[in-house]
Image (cartoon, rainbow, N blue to C red; front, side, top):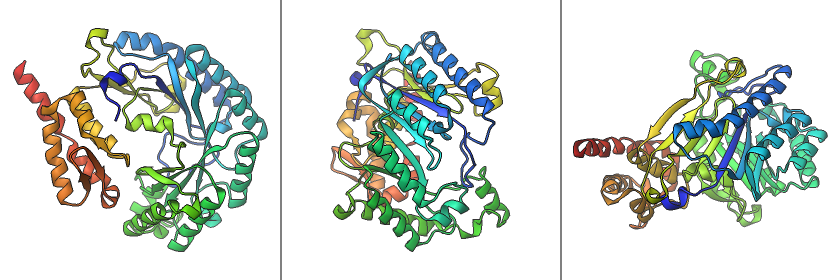
Length: 421
């Protein structure tokens, strides 16, 4: 667990949202879609405009915006749909405004079959050293039903091309619970994943949002997107548990779980995503992007827990393209940050270090949280040895229920502070 004195002098992570897709997956509710290619250049110009404005805006808001960057993540959407010259323009602007660590982790999300040779070359030239492939399933009928445009052979070929280009740090996404998925087909996907020998995998349990096409169909009882073939919640949970067991097997490459949905070989954890769970600063640019920056404190006060600013951009593309928009902002008190430290830290298999939270937030604030820990331990959802608190396997399946228990602790502490004031 990283605590306040270290956080105050931390490097920055950059997240750039690229919302363009060739097709919309049936289960997707992200702010992404099929937009005309004519929007791409305008969008990159807006990203660069917001990048240039970020420093002055941070100064006005009274937050630290580190210039040093140790991770970059191009997400979406499908960033690999941008033309090579637009990718080059974007990275040039980033490097002009920020100082990249020599070993910065630079990730680009790519959809299988949508990575042209010239785009791959542009990504490598820009310094991209990690790629996340949105595979979701190695079973062709499952990807087809979900609205994906690739098949297994395309994925295997893309992996070959990435490695030939010098990118060996590759993540593969899989989803447990796709329409038509069975235990047999899920185990087949896991077996193919093992044969691919990638150093990182993300395994998500399908959560159907009512704003997605699949979610609307499930509510309405339709059949166009095969909602009737979505596995039950219990079946999805069993598939997830199977993945944890299979991926850790030595003969399958041993991808050890380090976060609820993430598995890696040693040394290949996603450094950018870790900063979200460790509450390290990041700046999100583009459509529906989130950021977290810390209050700028005088050097003498940097051992204190200051406020944190979280802010989000619009999720409406025409609105974003029309020009700068006011961000939705929320200041988090130390008490609210303490809540976050629990439900974000518990996502990690390493768990929450109690002593680190006491150093950062004080013993009084930690006491009610330890009462929650005791209750969750009685239910078999967490383990605690007094030093570290971790989710149990059952706790990972019911993680949202566990996290909910830590919400509201900050309200009591804020009330005490107001009374003292």
